[in-house]
Length: 598
Image (cartoon, rainbow, N blue to C red; front, side):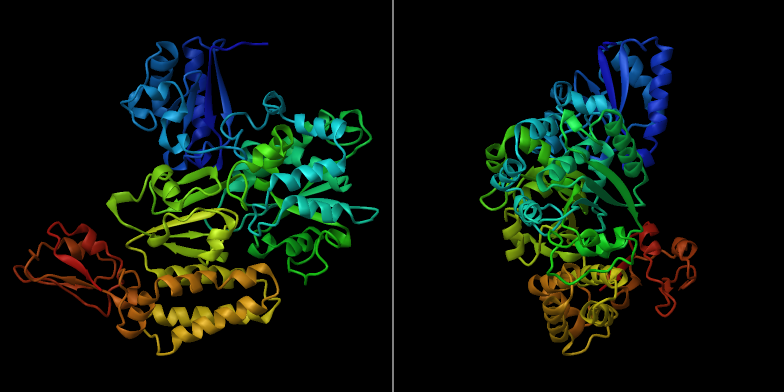
């Protein structure tokens, strides 16, 4: 076996791939060959490191030096300086580029030092397309232990004692779900994985599939053994081509190694996994709609009961968990239920992966123990708000969640705390908003998404959310009427109480939470015809200050609507009837003579 003195790990996740990480790897190979280092340095393609804001990323081991925002043109310098001469290229280092600590470990970077990676343990560490690398990191060891040392009942008991709850949004105890399915008597049972992940800004499951697909396969096989199933299905959206490709590779490798198929680990247990591609319908994140889609039908939810553990896929007992939930299972088997349950809070055990985005410096993936405060995630790990702006709110749980204001920044993030605040954990999307965000507009944005994605099966969701959206559009257009806010609340509560599935029942959450915490903004829109954040275009004007205007004419050149008129030595004027309110004139004015009148 070839022994290398250095390994260069290059992010091969979707984000970095879109930023030319493939070309970076190619250039690395070329420069390594040019410097005759082929037998000393190995280039490894990995999954996402998590710090997406600073991609493309590569890490040089054994030092652990992380280089960020790397360009193809930087590779020659990295190879000649670091790999050949042992000198850091400080201008590309992550974190404090003046610190020598970064050469010792990635823990010198605040973004990583405050995390605890369990579900993401192998992402950015191994080549996801090489099964031997997964095996080298204890891969399939848990499956071997389960099949040779544990009964199905012991596996389920371990899951129950661990306290692992579903990471897909519902938060239902995983062990209990498995126990329900195991108790059913049937000639066929199924294990399903929800990898659809339709929340805006969420990419947790995609990153696990891209960076550690074998962890999902191993966990699904363990689940199959626990409930008495020999067949698994992974439902993944077709918009995830890298994830689908790597999962296909992993499934084929597992079959070649005898880790899928018949007589796994020399036992009489058999299990296989197939992929089913979804068209990207948000409603197919709901378990019964997902199963209906796998069956080849239109993805619409079914009434419950009966629950899938009793009658699921093809009316057979079925369990469904999402990718992140499964990713925890091999570690729980190896390290024990007590170890996992010691992490987190009393009712929310373990860690949670969040995709943090929006108005925050360090966009990307983070994994922290349950109970970590929102302040720690946003400021200590996320790096705070860009341009010194003030934190206003955070949206958790995607379109099904709610907005948490600054007054609750020190709230621990766990299932129960978020529900008490009018939000929810969801799958883990976390969108940060600053002082320039209009909360009425945010509520409208998420409701637009829900209306567009509603399957239309039940009237509360199909009609009710549409009526709510019409009211919000009227309010943000400056045409709000007395009584609109009360109507919104009544509609929202009725939809929550009567919609068929969980997606419809939670659709009003963004509206209800913003009404609760930011009702003054709604009132300003309706009563004063003003948007305090200056976002709603119908309520604002761009105005030229007669005192500051120098009649230079720059604004007229950048205006796409040709709505600015004036003469030399006479202040220019904007025709408000023609103005598109794009802000191009204000951005280009060198004298700061143009301002937003809200």
